[in-house]
Image 1 (spheres, rainbow, N blue to C red):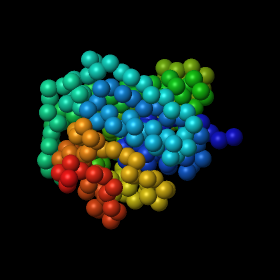
Image 2 (cartoon, rainbow, N blue to C red):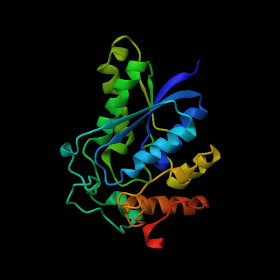
Image 3 (cartoon, rainbow, N blue to C red):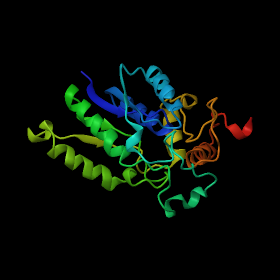
Length: 232
């Protein structure tokens, strides 16, 4: 019998690759995707396509109230998405307006509850602390602390068990992630990265996420399947 696992599946490059890694390791995955009124809600459809492509049987989609978040990523927000930043210095800048307060804490908490309910002690998340926008909840210290909390505050931990928070991409650059995913057969045309896509779903090509994605494909020597708004 395969070991059960839970994957936080956003519909982006990183979560798609993390899911492929888990499946390659023999895990029977269940996926969780969140809608929190993000501007790039096209990623929800991408997650559905990835679930079908990766043959993941169980896919839970959870809606969270946008009112609890102050972030430029929220569709109703008056904050602007940062554009054309120098991605070489992104982590040296202040935390950008696209930071969503406590997002990974909330997402992992749902995954933890779901995992304990279905007997899955392994939770996968496609976070990286190398090529990212400077979010504090993408760091190794955070995931280590979350695991301690999970083991202390759950029945699983109280009975002597433990959760494993898998972060297989944590120390990889985007081009390394793309190369690895390509080797595992990930179809990146099914993924989406842009924070501020057009109504038609075209990527802006100027936000942090687009710039990091584009550089990743260039550095990996692999064609980027994304259609960017500035190219049409």
